[in-house]
Amino acid sequence: MKNETVKAGMKIGAVVGGVFFLVFGVMGGFYFGSYGTLILLTKLMGGTVEPTLFVRAAIVVGIGVGIAATATVSIVVGGLLGTAVGFIVSPRKSLEEAKAASKA
Image (tube, rainbow, N blue to C red; front, top):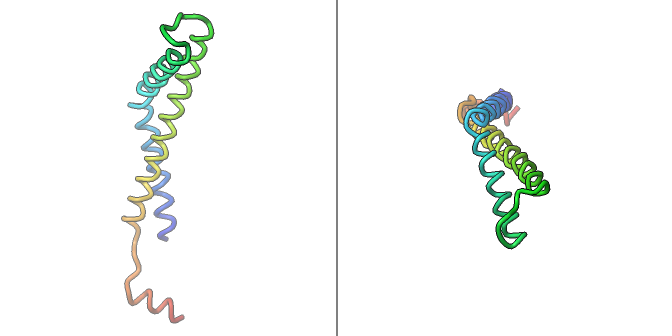
């Protein structure tokens, strides 16, 4: 019974984390992915970056990585919080039941 409650909490938490990502995380992933790629390209090229095809393609890949990383973090953190809540809410055996189960 306890294991089922914890698993249900994990699944519910992962879904809540996914919804939270869809509502709040897409824009953050887009922003940080593109900005991080632009900063990285500036450091690699040693100055200002011209808007060439390579730079634009690298920024698009950076946006994809930023969105994927944000989604992963949101879903994993939601699953962890859901697991913790499921563990807290799960029914516990009383001391007498535990002793009786260990003797049997």
